[in-house]
Length: 253
Image (cartoon, rainbow, N blue to C red; front, top):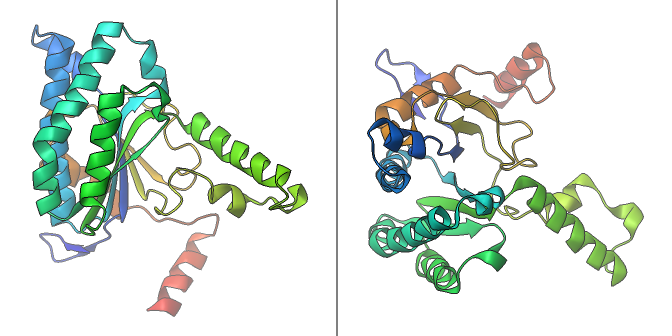
């Protein structure tokens, strides 16, 4: 929980998921190549990780590279992979010291081997940390995630571990890539677009959505704080009525 200036208590999301949009446009506005925007965006990642730690947010999921991003020009894809490799090399020590656990989700089959090794090393080095879990989605798509979960269930049916008629929503959820991570409470997309772009399709079913025109390289702790305050005003009903939500809060008080 966080206390605002007027001493009211603000609800803090346990898990924030972000589409970091606007790096290319940020660079273009300044007459710079797109990769300069991506590099500036790494600084925003550092700032928001720090803000999550200070606000006791336990999970942060960042959409770093989508399964559709492989369609971008080969030069840009290569630069993005190089940037991920460089960022891991420069940031992992500080993340580890601050108790941040790093995890990656996505299809690793197309990721360069040296980048895969760096990802695995980061996960291994930080596996025992518990202040914040930083989930980085690389070569990730929500449809891919649901598809691979369905494929796992088919394999379990074929091996007679489960019966097809016993497949439930909960069983499918146990095969999604974020099985041991709670669903996001708050989704943020920077850069002015109002869509979720194949990101965490299963997980975002009841997530509060927040869109901002701020480009990702300009998304600082103040802008993040505005998103958190907006979230604190929401009433999360999960299909119930407002009266039921209030009644449950009273009964659990």
